[in-house]
Figure 1 (cartoon, helix red, strand yellow):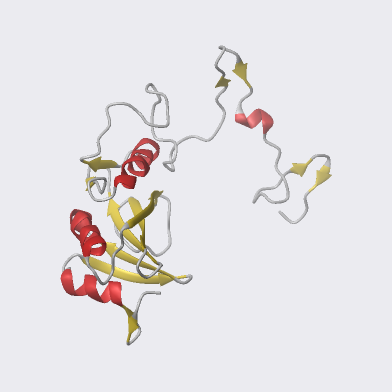
Figure 2 (spheres, rainbow, N blue to C red; figure 1 turned 90 degrees about the horizontal axis):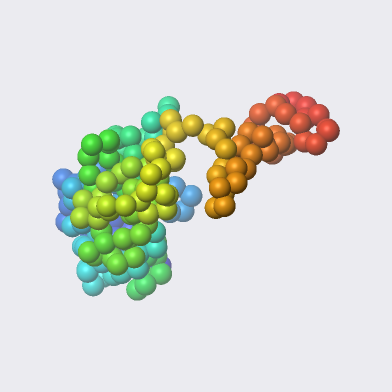
Length: 199
């Protein structure tokens, strides 16, 4: 467990001291700690967390992207997209989330030179959201076919309605042809032949 002094985690206090102008916000949520930093300072902050002998955030768990273009609630950062890095200190068995924000046309410095495990998660975020990681650019798509248009995890991307083309050239049904609303969904519909009430 990461040491805590006067209610402040050791990792947070060290980042506050080392990067006073780049630390935008510290947030505690459901028992996890998030630090929001400027995107340009991301590599320096990550290297500090990894190399500081008192912290040793040497294990890269993952990074994920979020599109906030249709979010009307309070935000931690300004910018359409957020990329959240999940780091683990094997010294303290403690997790820390590092968040950065980016808009279309901006780039985020890659962490693949600090954490080898960052290369492919960053490529996934690039492929599905269109976020560009400077130093981890790809010539071809990663998860999607090279001729795929758009970024399917962006909020404006259309959902369903396209026929699925299978390997042998066969066409499968569109998503909407197979959808059956059920009680777990947040829209009015039917489950089999039973009406769903109260929705």
